[in-house]
Amino acid sequence: MASQPGAALRLLLLISGLRAGLLQQGRSSSLHGSSENFAIADSFYEQLPSSGERQNLETENVTVVEGEVATISCRVKNNDDSVIQLLNPNRQTIYFRDFRPLKDSRFQLVNFSSSELRVSLTNVSIHDEGRYFCQLYTDPPQEAYTTITVLIPPNNLVIDVQKDTYVEGEEVEMNCTAMASKPAAAIRWYKGSQELEGGKTEVEAMDNKMFRVRSQISVTVLKEDDEVPFVCLVDHPAVKDLETRQYIDVQYKPVVMVSVVYPQGLTREGEALELTCRTVGKPRPDKVTWVRVDDDLPEHVLIEDEKLFISSLNKTDNGTYRCEASNSVGSSSADYTLYVYDASATTEPAVHDTRAAEEGPLGVDHAVIGGVVAVVVFAMLCLLIILGRYFARHKGTYFTHEAKGADDAADADTAIINAEGGQNSCEEKKEYFI
Image (cartoon, rainbow, N blue to C red; front, side, top):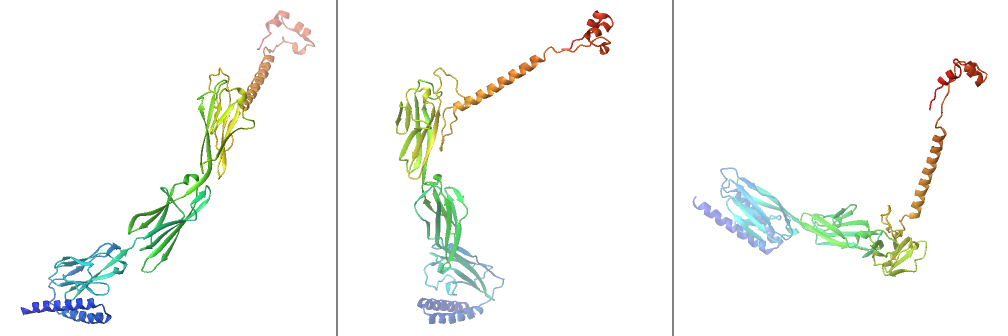
């Protein structure tokens, strides 16, 4: 009886060597033969002594990114040196205890003991995906399986646009394609740091359990979008922060702004005035001109590039001065309304002189304001005169009550004669109400 364990061990080693030789040949007939030998081995294992205590076989599923390392662990509780082995999805033995019959050097033994068989698989590919079996030869035999899931990140991320240059207000259609991923990638769009909504996504299944994902979005571009990145961002469990960017060249008509260089305050007679016209556009404005709205420019006005200069102001210079700029996209303008004050003026006007706008004049004519004020003042004066005359006409009004008997008198003299007490009595009874 003492020799039985030694004989069993020699038989196990013989079977393991047979498995390794058959797998190395790689022929279907050999594999068929190996299956028969596996059956012989299984029959032998069934005859091994059973464990006195119940043994539990445990393992865990593994998720790994393609090209990385997967670790498979077969763990046993309450083991009494029963044989542990690991098989691949084709039921080929990868490890028998600490011996590797399968001639695949990517499998390496990490740990072997009576309670664990741990094996690593390097450079994992999609072909390694599937169920791997842990077997424990007890009475009855136990088996557990672990599933290796291989994740494949998109190997290419591309944004396609119809053209490189757009005019403000045009609609841009962009497509982002994530190639050959597993599982299918989720695509999000951003303009700068702002997430865009409304993307349309199509998912196409490919061979080898992989997917191609295509997302399309349409955006109406503004001048603020010039040189701002449109970002295609991929959400995928196998990769983080995978994105690609597309910059759009947006052309737009000029934006025009007029500002006063000096004076910084009232524009008085005899003083100088300098205006500057700032323009921004894409392409750069090729023409900048100064005009005077509804009149010709004064003869003493000097214009140099984007600047307008008047050396000595007078009231004939009053008016609206307009700066116009244009490029291949369009034209726009901004205005400055000038009002020249007396040389002795020291009070700031209620309405400032500067009026600048992108499209057309926004300046308020001071003559119109003065006319409105004059009408209001005239109306108030007329109202005061009418009220004064009314109160003057009613000043000093009184009522007189004649003496008793006046109601029956034919005239005033008779009333006085008939009054008691005569003239004096009548005078005494007169009352004034003012």
